[in-house]
Length: 105
Length: 105
DNA sequence: CGCTTGCGTAAGTAGCCTCTAACATAATCA
DNA sequence: TGATTATGTTAGAGGCTACTTACGCAAGCG
Image: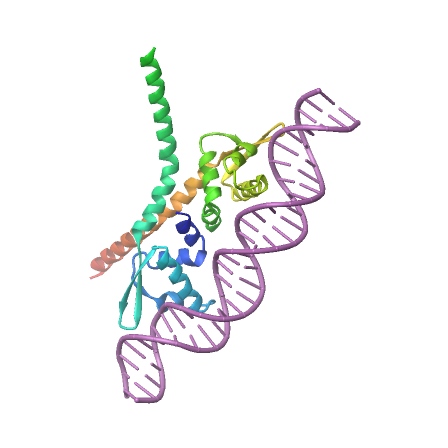
């Protein structure tokens, strides 16, 4: 999970995820959105995103087309949700064990 | 927002956030959960968490008590949600402009 | 077949991050 | 007050990250 967090912690990578959220874009299209860094830098960011599973790659001739892998972003969102639900579970467990104590008396 | 992501991208800091999620813990209590790193390392992680706003600090005598700042975690969750809602908005805008085109004809 | 286009990879560098060890500070206790 | 406890801060080492430049490789075009 920390991999996902660190991957999105890089602003350019986060922006790339937004770019390919609903459109399928070629590496060059993505690079064109970042005029002040090299195409190589973007290619490396795409590599990180690919390896972390946040984007999927499809090839069409020489073009490498990228799309977001929404399920991975969903997984991250679920992870954040777990901060709340886990504490609710703890509260529920606490309530249950108190109930248990009552029954034992 | 990348600050929040990077801060939680460090496993120990993420664990600390969980630790102080529903309990208020002193720095020493937190450090006790990480036997294989120095207290100093934990203190520095607490500094990062404090500066990123993810935890609040309260002092009681010599003890520094930490609690999570849930609103910041909520802000991060909302940010992830925005990936979906933003694309919905784009879809809605698209639908609206198509509606507009229809009306113009 | 050579040349171009689209893209990834390798090598090197500068900066950042995490850690430990040592020191500093502030509150409490005897 | 001097010693102790709880904590933060500083300095430096080692590793990781993001960048650029240079090169490699495959697909298509003439």
